[in-house]
Length: 426
Ligand SMILES: NC(=O)c1ccc[n+]([C@@H]2O[C@H](COP(=O)([O-])OP(=O)(O)OC[C@H]3O[C@@H](n4cnc5c(N)ncnc54)[C@H](OP(=O)(O)O)[C@@H]3O)[C@@H](O)[C@H]2O)c1
Image (cartoon, rainbow, N blue to C red; front, side):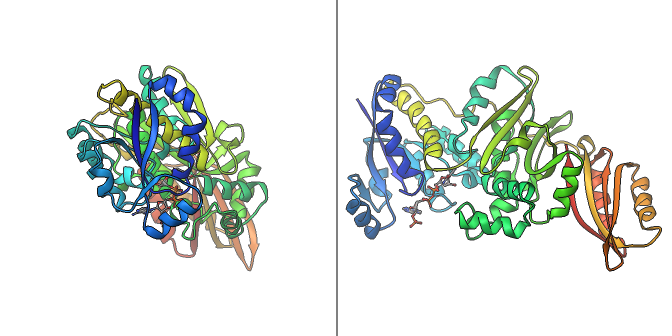
């Protein structure tokens, strides 16, 4: 028996799928009792079709999605075009045509995932997307299957390779943000518009998906507080090192008594923390739970073969259900009502980097603000930075998110003071 699939797009990830299907053909047949055959590939136009045929790819290339939707022999559609449209329309139409869908499109899933999953359920098919979080790390299936006996209390993740590569250079080499971005662009890690990577948006998409599998709750993307790495300076990095920390862009999801909370923010991680050692473009997801305790899943977050491997693992699971004629189970069965945590329930320490005039009484003015919020200093550093200016770095004791927001607002409005940066401290 053969299970026919169609690929939508034939770019970086999609062109890695045939390699894995071929290299692992025997293993796949043993697991599924069937062969997985690429029946059709949707490309943009005739010019791309001609180029791919000239390169020796002998698939049936089509330029209209209708050729795939109306082909009853195709059981699974693999969307690897990226972006929201036309991916969303094509996935919806494929599900409505009773075809299972595999995708790696985290942007689309983070924003429209609930809607697409409903279309899948209404049509008796499944939507799988292991590759959408941390490319080659099989984290979603692990959370859905291996963690079904456990209760997760916290997820920490370094899940954006581009920003982690840049932070690694900024920490290890003392580079500025601009130097690190230039190198990431030169190596092809950063896109021409790096906003999604450096501003924490891509990592925030992944927090939305992780929250569904780890906590059974779908956090609205707009509710994931996210801040990127643009404001981090060599001074922040040096001070972190002096205090035994490494700065990284870390995503966090926690469940407190009042509910769930997710954010992606620059973070001081203790040098001995497992996540502090995740360098370059590598990704890791650190899971805290009441059963297993602490566990970290580490690996490549992107790349053709790692990402295609996750895509093919979804294909194998779906091919098995097609071959054996049973309904494919939903990718994630853990679904609870989403309840958001109260800000009073979210306690963390923070680093505040402030610049002001180098004169007496300035620290006192800051101390008065912190005192009024009933937050005390854990450590304070002050140094002259020339031209009668001083740099003040404060590491606070724990405060809740209301106190943090209030202090940020008050320091920003304080005459003669510039709040240069704030960083969470773990
Ligand atoms: N690359 C990774 O390491 C990685 C990791 C994790 C997840 N992902 C996700 O995987 C997906 C694919 O990424 P990728 O890196 O493979 O992207 P890519 O190299 O840009 O490939 C996408 C391909 O789809 C084609 N395409 C776009 N719109 C199309 C349309 N309407 N009809 C036909 N073809 C169309 C593109 O053609 P044009 O070039 O003409 O636009 C391109 O050839 C994305 O959702 C991405 O977020 C990628």
